[in-house]
Image (cartoon, rainbow, N blue to C red; front, side, top):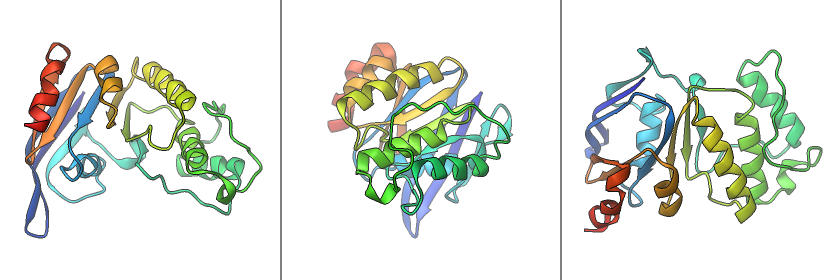
Length: 210
C-alpha cells in the first residue's frame, strides 16, 4: 500500500537519511520517533515530495503527492487576517472540494480573526481544515504540541477512526500515546530507520537512548 525508499537525503554535504526502506501494507497508526535533529520532519517532507532526495515513495503504486495526503506540520501555516470560517473555505478550495459536509473536530470561534487566537486554537483551526477531506494517508508531525489535555483526547480518538481506513503516520515525543495505539513504530537514529512491531515496543527506549 505504502512503499518508501530513500536512498539518500543530504543538506549540502551532510547526509540526513540513508538507506531508508519502509513498507506499510494496511491501514493503521504508525509511529515515527527519534531525537531532535535526527530527520523525522525531513522524512515526512521527502515522503510528500516537499524535499528533493534520491529514492521514491508510492501509495497504491502511484507516486505520493502532497495534494493526496492529509499533512499537519509541527507549526502549521495559517493566515492571521482570516476568520476560522474564512480559512476553512480557503482550505476547501485548496483541496478542490466542490461540495462537502464540514466535520468540526474542535470548537473554535468561527468569526473571530485568527490573529487573536492562542497557539493551541490556531492548531485546532488547521486540524479542522485538513480534516474536511478524507485521505488514504495522513502525516502528522507532532500534532499534540500546543493542545490541551481534552484536545489531545479528542484528536487521538479521531486518529483512531481515521486509521480504520487510512494509513496514519504520526511523530510525537509523548511515547506513551504511540505505545498504546501504534501498529508499528519506526525509530530514526544515525540516518537509518529501525522497525519495531508491537511486541517489541519495550526495546525502543533502550535503542533510542543507547
